[in-house]
Amino acid sequence: MKRVLIVDDEYLVRLGLQTTINWESHGFQIVGAAADGQEAIALFENNEVDILLTDIKMPGLDGLQLIEELKRRKPSLYVVILTHYNDFSYAQKAILLGASQYILKSELNETNIISTLERLLNTMEEDEQPRRGSKNELQDYFRRCILADAQGAYPDREGVVLPAGRYMLASCRCDTSTLPEQRQEMFYRSVRTMIDKVWPSPVINNTQAGRYLRVYMLLSVADQAAEEALRESFMRLSGNIQQYFSMVYQVGLSTALGEQHLRQMVEEAEAALKQCFFSEKPVCIYRAAPPPRETEPAVNPAKLQDLVRSRDWPTLKAYLREVFSELRAAGDLRRAQVAYIDFLSVARQLATRYNLLGNAFFTEKKLDYGNFADFCHIDNMEMVITDLYRTAVDLLEGQGKCYSSVINRCLQFIHTHYRENIALSDAAEAVNVSKSYLSLLFKQETGINFSKYLMTYRVEDAKRLLTGTTYKTYEVAEQVGFPNPYYFSKVFKDVTGLSCKEYKNLRP
Image 1 (cartoon, rainbow, N blue to C red):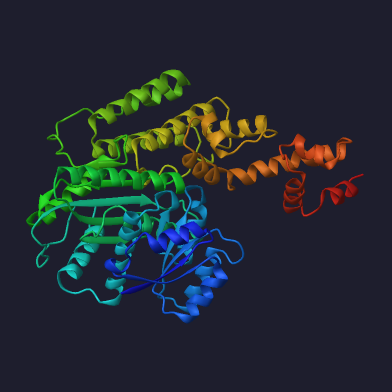
Image 2 (image 1 turned 120 degrees about the vertical axis):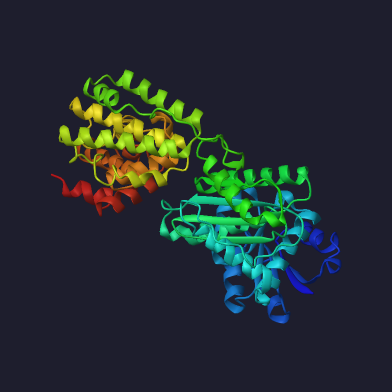
């Protein structure tokens, strides 16, 4: 029986957790309930505790500090956090400190609590006993599948045995290359917690991190209703990751098959994952592809070059839309890749002919054919190609000598609206690209992130106002987009190394 310590500063929450659930019938024992972190430490010292069930935001010693302290004393302690929907940033920190699961307080009921703890119990049992036999072989099989080459050279499943039943395999992928290093561990822990909530007791849950977070989940499904519920669960998972981390998490699901078709499930899940490239939704269930047919190349290089040389951007833009509309209708990943290579080949020829390679946007890195692997969706590819050719036209007209058209338009937006309360999302909407794409492109081309550029630009204007006008400091702050003069003073000193008063005194 696993021993649970409850910590929450709300009396009714503590009382409800203690009295409305038959803990012992589920294999758990409540050893105490504390109103704050200090009381929890005292109970922890006098009792053996296996699981900490704690609120995060509490007066005095809060949940984050409590987790850190108790994990230091007992690293094997398992932690489940109680959080509100709006406090997910605290949940992320708690996961980084070692929390295993979380429960939203809006969903605090016996079913959710017990199902969460039972999933945790399965994890604890696996940690306490080394994996053996079939499950270990399955783990190894999926690990080799993740590493299989792009041609689909999946490993032989000899010796890998599954109990009789119907299964679906989920192949999941998320590009984490743009994630700051200091946030990666938090991201992986958070996603693992979210994944654990998708489906109770998966047959296998194999995860591999790197540039791409890859997850394989083999799940038992009893009927068609369970299959649909599984798909909806993955849709919620993908939506949560998009909302909390602004990252695309795609899932390919195999059809439901018997235990003897494990290899087919792997191949179907991988094929479904590729179908996400063209889908409006991040979760795709495998569908058989139509037989390949001979088609004309999607890109006409001669026509593309003529349109660029003519500087006729409206007609060129319409042609690009036509090509991508055709690629979407075909739904053929290989054809999209060939089109991307054709687009870059023409761009390389134009860059060489018109001496554009010295430009920040026409670099060998930008024109690398291997960049196709960076696209999780055809929309991303279309944005990059459209921006590439818009930049080519601008450069041939003597415009945009430093940055791509997207960044030029973004900079113009900043220079026009910096006095207002603007953010990256406003700039992304103004230039009609996604927030994550603009963030990545802005850092690549300018060398700094959006917020730092905006602050620096505001400070440069503040310097002019401090020395060339009679405005007081708080008035200068308002003029350059800082409603809080104290924050303005801090930012000004961070950027210049001087206080506003020191800067004014240095000027003649």
